[in-house]
Image (tube, rainbow, N blue to C red; front, side):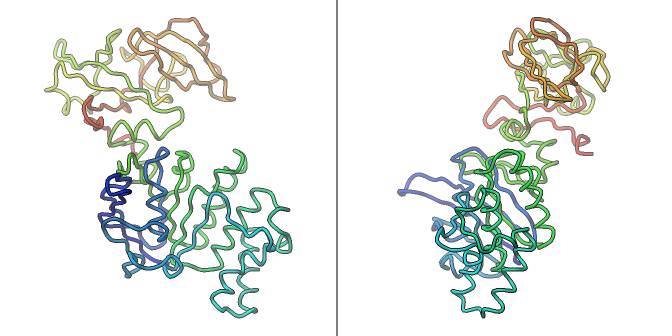
Length: 376
């Protein structure tokens, strides 16, 4: 396996349309990196540049100690798994997995050993004589994985490989992919638009937007300490709530004034925000950090806003409550299923102020107050 480095990489189409901007990332040998972001953010283009399927417009890509800018895809010693599996329909599973090795001139005995070993790892030994049309989606994806594994490349590249699977199978395959990475210790770059997939798979997650890297870190770091409001809102389901308001000082205390009520600014944020009286800010709070009086697992003393219950959605042990204030039409709280909230009620909803975030209202919504203790 190998270290992979991208240094100041750009991709420009038609001489003007820049889809990847100054991409920099150092991927350690054996690391599992996930590129995540909305459609059109440049994540698949970045992966294809690493694979050599797209030329880079500027910058440098290294695999191991070798600059591969002008190296053909077949000579980069990488293996790529696609969303649509890309299996040869007329070949058996064995032949699909063996094909790349045959092109290399590997002996029949070695091919058989490598294919059987990969098939055992993936649980498809009994499928080697079948053709792709006789396989389920999950089985086809395992064959595509096996075809990559037998090549023993320096780096594995995955381009949304689970998108065509149903929800239950996606969850199962995520666990299998993670275990496979642990077993192989393979350097892996994985592209997805599914934020849950990104958080469960990656050693580090790279969040992209409009071709620009927004944040790089572990799933825990990005979830609990997002650097801007885009990252905060992209990761998490339901997504983070954003309430715009004003910082006001009253009686020596600092408050976030939402317009329909005030919330006390917590002690950890006062030092950062104390000189910003009457400044407009955005308060970010995740749905699981909101609660009714009975369900709160944190202090409930002056840290509530009166909200109207619009809709409730039962989800087994949890339920989502869709709420509103006079100034915000949609606030989502994730509550215990035994909550007594019902549509049409007006109730106080409490905020876990030790774990909220404050973002700028300007530009990219940069975080201006994050509680680092939330990471622990």
